[in-house]
Amino acid sequence: NAGVMQNPRHLVRRRGQEARLRCSPVKGHSHVYWYRQLPEEGLKFMVYLQKENIIDESGMPKERFSAEFPKEGPSILRIQQVVRGDSAAYFCASSTLAGTAQETQYFGPGTRLLVL
Amino acid sequence: QQQVKQSPQSLIVQKGGISIINCAYENTAFDYFPWYQQFPGKGPALLIAIRPDVSEKKEGRFTISFNKSAKQFSLHIMDSQPGDSATYFCAASNRPYGAQKLVFGQGTRLTINP
View (cartoon, chains in turn brown, purple):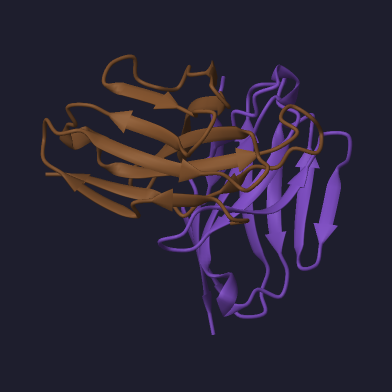
């Protein structure tokens, strides 16, 4: 895990509340991916962002979920009106040289969201 | 067609033995096949990766074998050690799209007995 920071590491929310997950990429990386991992499953792609742009959000639910990667500051994954099915580990990965043969995604430690 | 199927779900190997994990895919447009290692409470870490123009890649005790015609690839861990105990994920992506949306297998929980 080459320097991707995620916080909080653990987040507990009650149904209906909002969850905000933050990701600071490796210094110098301008591409961020978010993945969700349900218990005992592999990671599922959610969204791919560059600074100030959403490039691909095909894996993100159309309602309640949004993501941003502003010019300054971390990338934010926001989940509004959380439900129990949102309980999962959310991983952020960052990379440089996106789409090239040299690209490698580096993953953060994840945020484990528990919805009560 | 976007799935990557991984087996076995769990694997127990004696120290010094060979651990073998297999993956199969359907999408012939996939052209990048990485393996990730994940310890409990941590994020996945890239272990080794292969492109379909070679049939095998070796890095230390870790080897990827790739069979393009069968659309299968596998991870071999030689001389397995207790420190290798972790969950292993295979993945695949189609890089030319410019967005490396990794498609992950379901994971294999590997336990190396001392």
